[in-house]
Picture (cartoon, rainbow, N blue to C red):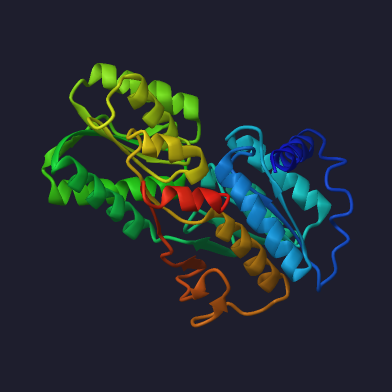
Length: 334
C-alpha cells in the first residue's frame, strides 16, 4: 500500500512538472467511458490517499478512467497548472478540492469553455463549476464543533482557530459557524486572534500552536479545520505536556491521529469519509459526462437523495471521531 501511494505521488509530481507528457492516453475516452481527472489540495497525505482509493475503486466499478492529481504542496498555483494540464489532455470531467476558490475561477472557466464539466468539493458556491458536493453542511458542521468545544471547556476559556488557508471557503465557513455558536452560547469563551491559515501543514500547525501557547498561557483549546491542523496542534500540546489541559478538536485522518487520541492530546471531532468523497467525484462525474439530469429527488450513490441548492449538493454524513471509534475507522484505511 505504501508503494502504491508513493507511485501515485510520483505521478502527481510528473503531471505538474511535465505537462506535455503527463497522462498520455487519457483523452481517448468514449462517451460511455469518460475520463475524469481530480485535483486535490496536496498529494501524499492520508486524507487524500484515502480519497484516491475511493476514486480508483469507483472508477474500476463503473469502468471509467478516473485518476487523482496531488500537487506537492498546498499552493493554488500548482492546482491551476494541474487543471491546465487536464484541459490540454481533453478529459471529460475535472474535479477539484480547491485551495483558493477565487484563484481557480479563470482556469475553471476555460475548462468549461472547452466543454469540460467541472465538479468541486469543499467549495460551496464555487464559481465556474457545474456542481459542488458536500458531505456536511457548512453551518451544521461548524456548529457541531462549536457545541463540542463549549461542552469540553465548560463554556469558559481562550481558544484559537486554525483553517487550511484564509482562502479556503469551506474551512472559513465552518470557522464562522463555530465562532457564531460559541459567541451566542458561551460568552465566557474568548477567541485568540482571528484565525490562522496553517491547517494543511503539520509543521506550521505545530509551530503556530507552540507560539500561541507561549503568548497566551491561559489558552484552553484549539479548533483546527484542515486535516493536518489537529495533528500539528496535538503534537504541540504533547510537547508541552498539556494533555488534558488544552483541548484539540478538528477533522483528521484516523490512521494518522489515533495514537494522539489515545495519548489524550487529540480530543477528537467529526469528519466525513474522504474515500466516499472520492467515489462521489467519480459517480457524479460519470453522470454529468453522460448528460444525466441532477434534479430534486435524484439518487446519487454516496450522497443519497439530493435536493440541489443551485449547483450545490449538500448532505450531512458526519462520522464521530473519538477514542472509541478511531481504531475501527483507521482499519478502514482512513
